[in-house]
Structures are given as C-alpha cells and as structure tokens.
Length: 208
Picture: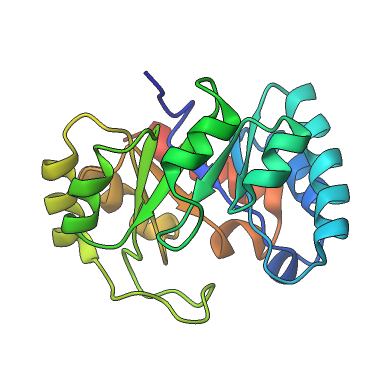
C-alpha cells in the first residue's frame, strides 16, 4: 500500500521558479522533500526529457522519488518512480500495463463523483483540487473548497489523498484537518527560496 513519505508533495514549475527542473529538485530535496512531481507545459519534449533525466538522478541520490506529470512515455524510458495523470491523459489502466505494478500512479479529480470512480482504478493515490483558487493552471476547474475536500475524504476511504490548488503555509493545516494526507504545492514553494520554503512547509505540517 502506497503512503506519502511526508505530508508535502512539491511540484516543479520552471516558469515560476526561473530554474531548471533539476535545480528545483535539488533544492526541494535539500529542504526535506522526498516525493516530487515534475510538471512541464512549455519546454520541448527533448529538453524536458534531458532535465527530467538529471532530476531523477538527483532525486534518487538524496533518497527521494520522482513523479512525471502526464508523460507516461518519458517515465517508462527514464524508469522514473511513476506518473501523475489528469482526467484527459492516458487512462490509468493503460499506464499501469506500461509501467508495471511497482510504479506510483496518481490521478487528478475535481469533485466527489470523479473521486468515487477513481477508487476503482489501478492507482496509488488520488489528487483533489483546486481546493482554493489558483493561478498555476490556464483553465482551472471549479474550486472544491474545504467542505468539498471533506466529502471526497469520505468517498475515497483509505485511498491516499493529496490536495492541490492555492495552498500556502497559512492554509496547510486546515487542508490536512479536512482530510488530505498530503498537500501538493507549486507557487508557495517555487516562488522564492525553495529550500527554505520546503523546510517551512514540512515544519508546519509535521506539527499537525
């Protein structure tokens, strides 16, 4: 049974951080992150592959696991630790066949109905969001809110659940109290001193 190594699940963003994925992973690892997702929407596939290859080596050297957003093909070629899939990406069943039983597969949901269906899929964790309004997606889904998160927690049972969308240090405690096993964070870590931001999140979350 998969479980999050700690309550923080940082996600890289080259546009916000103004640094390569490899550099961000190194800094997140130094702050204590042990599960990191690479998310890229702008780079060419060749450049993303190159950065992901270096980022994976860095992550493994510091005992962290690396998840690629969307790119099952790259995860397979690089032997990454897993993938995170959206509602419109490759179906989780197909990703599982390609990546095998040991790969970590996460799946995005945006309401309780989608989350209830996701429990039946061959995945390791469910993501729910956006919990709050967010600027990191061009066309964000409807805000779930803390009440929505509580409903999702009820329908997914013991399935590991990560919350995403507009979560900062001031909101992290409320999000975990509402049922999230971990919080996924982009801007609140990538925009600024990444090692310090990562460490501060972990400090706050470990006290909950």
